[in-house]
Length: 361
Image 1: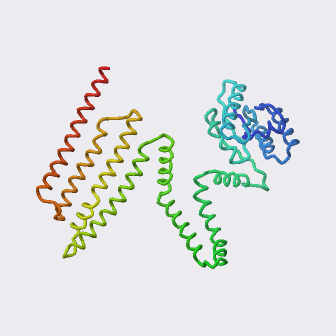
Image 2: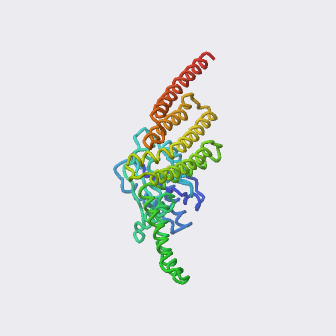
Image 3: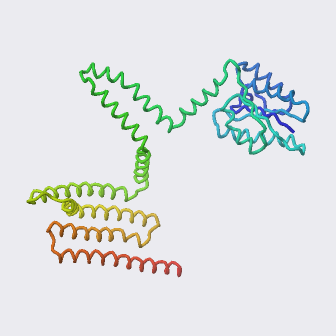
């Protein structure tokens, strides 16, 4: 059996005529089409209903029925659900024991968004879009533009650069009036260039991710947020300290510094600050894991590993700068290695013991 299904996703038929839907049968659909045409002659759904009647008259050699189903105005998800329920009612009413195939009639791309819902219930042989000849593709173009403007990502990518471009000319005129020729134009052009580069390289996604992490940290009381800020400050201090150490070493040296000496000076001046930043950040993470009931003893290895690595780097860089003796270097290498091994063994034993206690409990 063939079912000609007229789809009115925004329920113009029900809202404007007061008729109950779904409407099943040739005579019932004809009355609905006439009622809608009288209520609103300009409504495109009138053409959909009459096209459905036209189609069933063209299928003389097989069993065919026509029905009109509607959705909900202004709410796409609810509208799709409503159409699905009405299609189920139509199929239940047409329970003839035969396989039912459908020809879907719509008035544009918006109504066709419900096709997956209909296809999940009945096989669709074809889709017929009915548009007034004088306005061919007008609704489809409108719906496409509306979708683009409703999408936040597309809006930001398309409209923001376009808006900045349109602002360049009036801002340039304003700059000339204020005696600032070229300043605003260069500034706006630079901002537009930075925005497009950020979009092109995906930097905006990292920025959005960072903002979301900060927002989550603020509202959930994460210690990591505070320790990360302190760690960042320590990293900046470490960088400045490393540069200062490099300058001091360069001034004290009789010959130009080599690559190894430059690296050693930067490391010697900054490694203790970088280590402090790493310890601070790792302690914040461990605290959050403990508060969130996801703590493991092995997490405590991180600050000890950082201190051990920092000790080794401090000893090696100091030795290359003649700031440390060979004995001091040996002590730092040995101490750093023992510290890492001791922490690993200790926390492994603690975690194993905790696991056994939980099994016993």
